[in-house]
Amino acid sequence: MILLDFPLYLMETLKRWCSLCGCIIVFMFLTTVSKGLACEAPSSPQCFKRKAEEAFYICEWSMNTTESDVTFDLYFFDENFGSTNTTWYEIHEDRLIKTRSVDIWVEAYVGNSSCTSTKRSVTLSQTVKYEAPQKISISWLKNGLKLRWAAVEQNSALAEVRFQRHDEHHTELWENRTTNTTIESSMYQVIVTNMSKHSAYRVQIRHRPTQPRNPLWSDWSPVVMVPAELERSPEVSVTTRLVNGTRRVMLTWKPMPHTASVGKVNYTLKDTQSSRGCPCEERTHHFKWNKYTTYISYSAANISVIARNAAGYSPPAIIQVPAVPAADLKSCDKTLLNEKLNKQTCLELYDLQDGDSRSENVITLTGRKKKKEREQIRESIKDYVRYLYFEHTCDGDRKPRTVKRCLFYKKEGVPLREPQDFTPSSETDHSVDLSWKAIPSVDQRGFLTHYSLCRVKISSQEEHKDCQNISASLINHRLENLTPGTKYNISLAGVTRVGEGPRATITINTQPKKPVNGTRLTELTLMFKLL
Ligand SMILES: *[C@@H]1O[C@H](CO)[C@@H](O)[C@H](O)[C@H]1NC(C)=O
Ligand SMILES: *[C@@H]1O[C@H](CO)[C@@H](O)[C@H](O)[C@H]1NC(C)=O
Ligand SMILES: *[C@@H]1O[C@H](CO)[C@@H](O)[C@H](O)[C@H]1NC(C)=O
Ligand SMILES: *[C@@H]1O[C@H](CO)[C@@H](O)[C@H](O)[C@H]1NC(C)=O
Ligand SMILES: *[C@@H]1O[C@H](CO)[C@@H](O)[C@H](O)[C@H]1NC(C)=O
Ligand SMILES: *[C@@H]1O[C@H](CO)[C@@H](O)[C@H](O)[C@H]1NC(C)=O
Ligand SMILES: *[C@@H]1O[C@H](CO)[C@@H](O)[C@H](O)[C@H]1NC(C)=O
Image 1 (cartoon, helix red, strand yellow):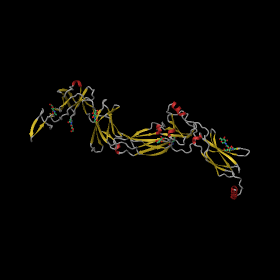
Image 2 (cartoon, rainbow, N blue to C red):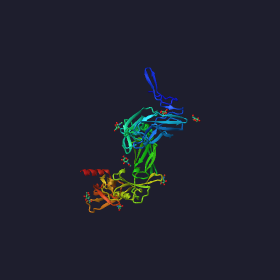
Image 3 (cartoon, rainbow, N blue to C red):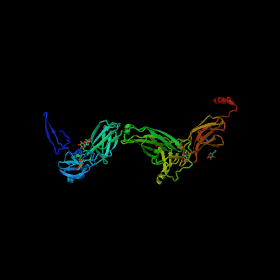
Image 4 (cartoon, rainbow, N blue to C red):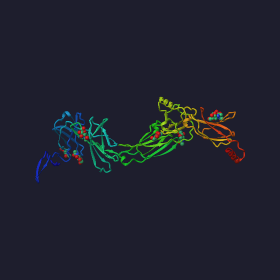
């Protein structure tokens, strides 16, 4: 059968038989009938409900025309439903014959001419056509691409997905997949397997109900651009500069791969200082450039950068910014721990128990916290433990700035242990060299103000204890003015403000008195000793 479009004046169906070369050609229905040139026939109308339970049918059609003034009459089983200037018509189901097949068509009027669409025979009952899927969200899974959009009804739908690898010229072939959707929190969901995560795609979806007897496919959704998966974290390079109590951290990274950047890529930057509540505003930044400058205080922070596109996000790039090293920290003269804090201030206490400032042991106190919470935080500060105390503030433009760093004990005690490996060497007749290792900081339990170094002559009548104070920063000392040929007990203890810790004790013998003159005699003494 050949359908011909005759630009003729024939008003009715034309059938013509023609016999040629022994075969029969049927010139069939001249269904498109035009009166005048300005009118090109509209498509035959499609009538359906948007959802099974709706009471209204929509009949819609289309027409190619440049005229603005077009009206249509909708015919349903010879009944004219009247004129409209839209390309659709809404009719209550009670006005329609639904259970048997009837003809429907449209007549269009353009200026002085009119034209009629093809007739279509339809049984309307259970004819449902959904709206095209909208607002489709996409994400790459291990095994394929997950597509989600709003569910029209409670029942699962049938979905057809068409996709084409994205290239500039749109030359790649379209592929189609038809699957049943699942429903999750009022969203239809399908997973299209065997798509490559390394490619970008153009995707369209249409869907139709599964329950009604006469389901129609919806229109195709708008084209969705699906970027490739962001497989790698951004490659970030960092430069930091100390600026008056704060650090200016400049981060730059390479653009994401081309295929993953289809559509748009955004970045999210977070720093751990803000996740600990210190010190300024919420410090999660979203932006679209591949560089960013931020400010962090002097304490250690991790900064993470994540790239996001429409189909997911990259693993985070984690930049570890160590604390600004501080040599010779003093003990705190004064802290704000028991003061009323303003909202700009944040205190941090790093537990230096193990000699390092690991961030998991940090106590954070800010003016933003509730009173009760602040009390609990204060109570969690332990006695006899050395803390590294930071005082940060927020400058007007939300830059965190470190105002103070010092060492802090909530309460001091006496050292728990003696100085370690207390050893004498190079005894002479009047002196001895002493060396030792510092008391481990966890055992100091307070600031050492000094060491107390004492000597006692043994086996003399007057067991007089003779002590002196030596600097807490020393680890060796020459003890002078000893009596030759004498046995001494020598002891060393660390001292804090609260008192003295246990003593390390050694016993030494000074050499006999040397004759005033020279080495020979020393040799003689040695020989004498050997004998
Ligand atoms: C309108 O024109 C387009 C392109 O020429 C064609 O594909 C389409 O079928 C036409 N629509 C109708 C209702 O004739
Ligand atoms: C339409 O008909 C009117 C009067 O019958 C006439 O004046 C007009 O020129 C016609 N227009 C066209 C486009 O044929
Ligand atoms: C969808 O589900 C129906 C009924 O559960 C089944 O008959 C049909 O084959 C399924 N279609 C596809 C494409 O999986
Ligand atoms: C550093 O900060 C302090 C306090 O805000 C300010 O008074 C001082 O001028 C600043 N110095 C520099 C070099 O910016
Ligand atoms: C930064 O990250 C490392 C590794 O995950 C972690 O050990 C460290 O405690 C973190 N530092 C901060 C300041 O959060
Ligand atoms: C050592 O220091 C303590 C405390 O400062 C002081 O009381 C004591 O007199 C000092 N001892 C000597 C021998 O200087
Ligand atoms: C000297 O030290 C020893 C061992 O520590 C101890 O037994 C002795 O009593 C001490 N002597 C004096 C006089 O302190």
